[in-house]
Length: 284
Image (cartoon, rainbow, N blue to C red):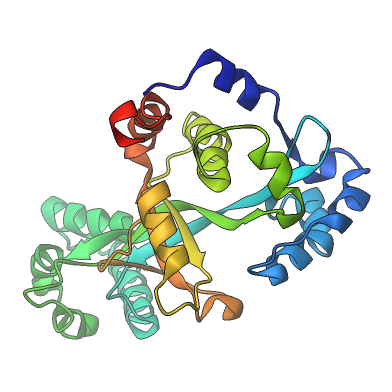
């Protein structure tokens, strides 16, 4: 059943605020803790304010009407790439681009050859990926790197070097101290689920007005045998574990599970969430 006006009023009473927009927040976060992963809570208490102030990572806190912090999350820009791309392949593509640049001014090139070279150079520059067909078009140039690149293509790899724009959900953490305050709001959905669809998703959709972006992604710090956190992100927020995409991981994320969500589906899924906010009487 659809969210009611009364429930919507409760959500509207919550305040989502940039952490560094109010210096009092530096002291307010001291009481924040999470009984599942307090390391994330320590981030909020230590480096978060400075990172938010410098705009390297955007931190947000969600406050109860009584002023308590219910939740915090953070966002930053990131980059995804084909799962098969490797550091050595990146070096090959860079070498390839350099050789193409060196011959692009050759006066003996036909207009068609020059166009083929320019097209491939632009694909490399814009991280759109290089296809096997692109390599074949340039065979007559007899570049040393061509044979090396051709070996990278097989039946499973159609393109190398393609990247995808993304927004990383860096932190996503509830305040265990305010569990009762959240319960007293009387909402039928989990706290993080509500925060994601009500606050986080509109921010991502707003960003699309100014920049192109294809994915949201995160690293689930899930060490449980039953992957409880991963299943939460899958079931409640519709994140997936892709086979074809990857991203560079900071050292602290090496043990985490990479998950992503196509941004193009977020708006529709958000509408569906609020259309089905309350369980139907048949399921109660």
